[in-house]
Image (cartoon, rainbow, N blue to C red; front, top):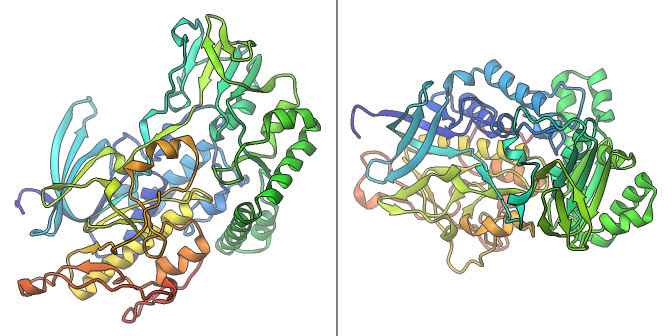
Amino acid sequence: MPQHLEHLDVVIVGAGLSGVGAAYRLKTECPGKTFAVIEARASIGGTWDLFRYPGIRSDSDMFTLGYPFRPWAGAKSIADGASILSYIHETAADTGVRDSIRLSTRLVSAAWSSAEAHWLLELDVTSEDGDVERRSMTCGFLYSCTGYYDYARGHEPSFPGIGDFRGEVVRPQFWPEDLDYTGKRVVVIGSGATAITLVPSMARDAASVTMLQRSPSYILAVPGRDRFADIARRYLPAGAAHRLARAKNVLVTQAFYQLCRRRPELAKKFLRKQVTDILGNDQVVEDNFVPRYNPWDQRLCIAPSADFFRTLKTEKASVVTDTIETFTPRGIRLSSGRELDADVVVTATGLSMLPLGGATFTVDGKGVDLGDTWVYRGLMISGVPNLALCFGYSNASWTLRADLSSRYVCRLLNYLDRHGYRSATPVARDGMTRRPILDFTSGYVQRGSGAFPQQGKRQPWVMRHNYLLDAPSALFSNLATDMAFDAPAGAPAAAAATAPVSTPAGVPDSTELEPDRPDLQEFVP
């Protein structure tokens, strides 16, 4: 390793909700490790700093989206984006990880050297003047907390005639700070979480807001405040109340998800009845709120305090289910022949998926094609040493899974140190059946899943979306299962790797505990 290059034990990529949480775990559970968090943007916060469209908020409760080590003190369970961003900033400052974050530093490429047992990172560092300088550094372990969305561009369908439209076309991902829609006619194209957030927020000031959807989505009305948590915080210390509310919400969310997957017809009836009770109009529900798929075939949208539905009961908002024939100078003409007049059109048509923040990876000079790899325990990649990816849940709070991933990484790093190993590489089993890492029918998943690792059907090669199963596995499972390690420094070359240990067929992975680890942490949500 060239002496002039900076070397760190661990580099975390991304200073959003996941990256700040990962830094805290690394600092507290691996106190001897040197590390840095690199962030491509000029500020921390990730999603919650980037997206600034009206009404942006969480789509998970803050007792599970928040960190388990830092109680959520806000009044609202479903919080607005500004409050979440402040929470991230305060956590980074109060835990001391802010000093380890390097802003305006983008990972361009990472090259693993087995001989040196480190990653060579190529970075683009942007100065305050906007000048970009290419720099290099090395690290022993790389942890990507960039999520799986492309934040530089969204999904942009080709709309016929859009160049003829005389109004403004806006993407939520790049919301103009100076956009004034007061008293204007707004059409929001889309039916996902962003559209359902935009409609009630924009309707406060706009003359009218119409949500134009090609097909309906499932929308669940949930309380904006958590009464259970409010009572718990009244009588218990903040930490205990937070853990209790968190545990309750984990159980409730998982129970409802299981109901949707195991008894979809019953879940459909429940969701439809809720919408009908709120809107009081069977025909409106039939026309606009009966999706063609089963609940949780795509991500379920939420409406805190039923704000979306309550707005539709006013004269300022409406939903139209139809397809676009063409844009016109005055608005949008639909396939049915109806024309929607608009001054502003918001294209809430979804995001694009992008693995590893767009950086390229090589192992001993050979490029890594993630689409040809397997995901290990939902966070490592077959054949790639000392690399972890932070994937959150698609059916529950992102942070639940992200925090488990960070704790697993810390366990693995400590395991390597105890045994004198330099690297750990997941080794895929022969004959596994390939499945997409995300089992959703959503358009953005179908378009992008081929660029991501695939999963099998048995642990540790399954991306489970179940916190109750993942927690004991992440905290207590055998770290040697299907894993190859290099030799301790100075060992003979013949001992350069250990054979991976396989979980016997029929043996639950979560019961295969690591036998020589004296510092097992208790299982707490």
